[in-house]
Image 1: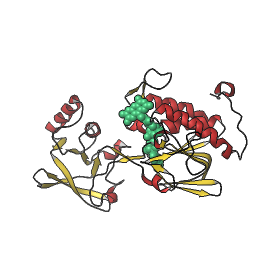
Image 2: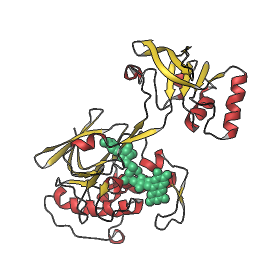
Image 3: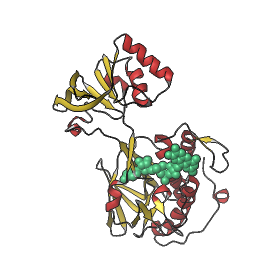
Image 4: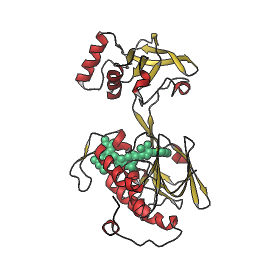
Length: 333
Ligand code: FAD
C-alpha cells in the first residue's frame, strides 16, 4: 500500500500542475493515468500542435508544454503509476483508498480528479475472444519493437500510426499485411509511396479494402486472421501478431460509480473550493464543471491552485494555511 498526501487521477496538463501546487504547500503526490505516458490530451491527441493561449508563452508545442510541466513538478518527487486505470475510490475513516486496474492501492488524505474527458484507451476491434489474445499476440501499442523481429504481422488501420509502424516494422518483420477497409490511407504521400515500394518487393502486402472478421489461434497465440472484402468473401492470413491502430477512445468509465454528482459526463464542483459533493475529493480541469466553466488549460491550472490550497487544511489536520507567494517561498532547484 502506497501512503501519500494527495492522489491525483490523471496525468494531463492539469494533473501535472497539481503536483507543483501540492508540492509548494508541502504535500506529496501519487499520479495515476491509463496512458503509458504523461500529458493527457496534449500527448495523445496533439503533441506537435502549437498552443497559443498559455500565459507567457506566445506559442508552445503541446509536447513541450508537458515536458515543462513535468520539469516544474520534478523537485516534488511525484510517484507516477502509469498504464493503469483508477477503478475505485473507497473512503476509509478520514482517508481514501484509490485502487487501480493493476492492483495498486494508494492511501491518500485527499484525492484530486483531473481526468479530462475520461480515461484514454485504444479503440478495440469488435472481434470475438480478442481479450484472450491481448498482450500475447494482439497489441495496441508498440513498446519493444524488437519483440516483433521475424514475425508475420497484421497491421490494421488507415492512419499515420498504421503506416508509420508498417514502415518501421518492415525493417525487422518477416512479412507485414496492412489491412484497411478502404483503399485510401490518411497519411503523408511520401510515407504511402514508401509502403507501396515495400509492397512491390513483397515485404508488405496491402490487404485493401478488407475488414477484420475473426481470430483463430490457441492459448492466446494467433495462427490466422480472417478478413473479408466488400462482397463478404473472406480469406485467412497466416500471422503471429495483430496490431490494430484504430485510434483512442475516451470513456468516463468507473468515475460514474464513485458517488460523485455528475452533470452531462462532468463532475459538478463548488467553484470556490473545487471540491465535489464528497469532502476531500476535488475535481479540476476538463472533467470539472460549474457555471461559466471554460475548458481551457489555463482554467485548469487555476482550479489546481484552488483545490490544493483547500486540501491543505485536511491533509494537515486543520492546521491553518499561511499563504505565501512562490517568490517568498522559493523552490530548491
Ligand atoms: P486531459 O488532458 O484530458 O488528461 C486527463 C487524463 O486523465 C488522461 O490522460 C486520461 O487517460 C486520464 N484518466 C481519466 N480517467 C482516468 C482513470 N479512471 N484512471 C486513470 N487515468 C484516468 N486547450 C487550451 O487551453 N488551448 C488550446 O489551444 C487547446 N487546443 C486543443 C487542441 C486539440 C486538438 C484538443 C483535443 C484540445 C485542445 N485543448 C486546448 C484542450 C486541452 O487539451 C484540455 O483542456 C486539457 O488537456 C485538459 O487537461 P486535463 O489535465 O484536465 O485533462
